[in-house]
Length: 133
Image (cartoon, rainbow, N blue to C red; front, side):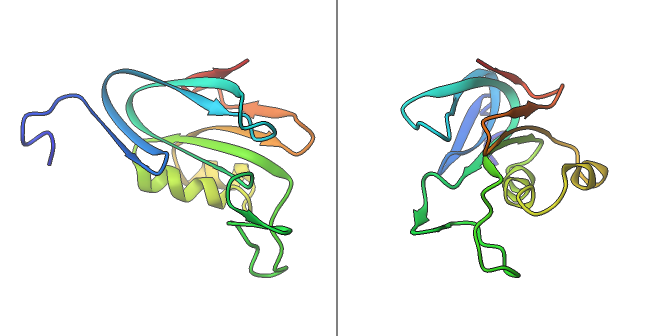
């Protein structure tokens, strides 16, 4: 719709789920262990980046992500960012990755990722448009 109206560069931010098209947009990746710090950056020209972490929406031992089988919140992943062509795909995968092995998701969907684990280790896919510090 925006492009039909003549907009060639724009950013849509829906609660930190971002779709961007246009000049380079650099965003900080929040440290899931210390929200006053960044652990990296991502620079996007076209596409969507979405993130998820249990550090923002949590209550007692629960976060906004709950395993329906165990009725517990996963703790093995502390933060994840997904870069994909669409926001719906990136946002969906930020939750799916807590429950589904990365290797399975990669066989069905095209996306790039950063995952920070509970021990502080991190993985970043080769095509992720950013870096960790």
